[in-house]
Length: 312
Image 1 (cartoon, rainbow, N blue to C red):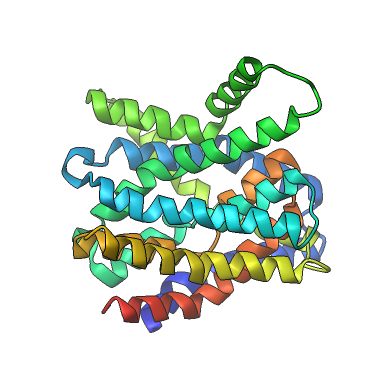
Image 2: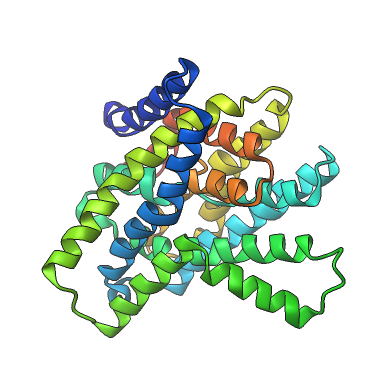
C-alpha cells in the first residue's frame, strides 16, 4: 500500500497545488488556459512520440491483449454515454465527452509508474503495447462521434463528414504524436542525439505542467450538481472496466503477464486527456475535470484492491 501511495499521492498533490494556487488568485483563468494549450498541443505529444518510437512492437504484440482491454473500454463508453443521455438528459456532445471519460484510462501518467513498482521494469511490455494503440484508437472513436454529432444539423454528405473526421484526427496533436512515433518505430529512422535531447526535455515538462494546469481547471469546474454523473464515470472507470477486462482476458486465454498488464491498466482513473478531450470540444468540461480529480483520489484504494487480486 505504501508503494502505491508513493506513486499516486505526488500526482494528487500536484493537482491540489494547482487548485490551491488558482483558488488564491495567483494563477488566473487566462494563465490556466495558456498552460493547458501548451500541454495539449505541444508537450504531451512529445511524451507519446517518445514512448511509441522506442517501443519494441514486434516482440510484445498480442491481439488477445488488445481485444481484452479495448473491447471493455468501448463497452464502458457506450454505457457511460447512454447513462448521460437517458438517465441525466445531457446533450449529445456531453454524452460523447462522458463516454470518453469512462473509457480513457490514465495509462501513461499513473499506469506505467504503478506497473513498474508492482511488476518490475521487465513486466511492462503489455502496458506499452496498450499505450501504442490507446490514444489513436480511443481518440479516433471520440473525434469521429463528436464530428458526426456536430454536423447533424448541417445536412452534410457522409463523404464530407468523413473528410472532417480525418482532418480533425490528423490535426489532433496527441494523435500526431503517436503517429509520428509509429513512423519512427516502424521505419527505424535514426534521430540525431540533440534532437532526442530536445524531445526528452519537452516530454519531461509535459506531465507536471498538465497536472498543475488541471488543478487550476478543477477550481473553475467544481462538481456542483453533477455528482451522480461523476460517480457513474468513476464506477465504470475504476470497477466496471477492470472487471470486464478480467472476464474477457480469461475468456481469451490471455497469458498471465499480458492479463496482468491489461487489468492493471484498466484500473487507472480517467486520465488528464479525458479533460483535454472535453475541453477541446467545450462539452461536459466540469464533469470531466471533476471525474479526473475524484477518480484519481478513489483509485488509491481501488488500485490496491485490484493489484491484490492479481497477486502483486
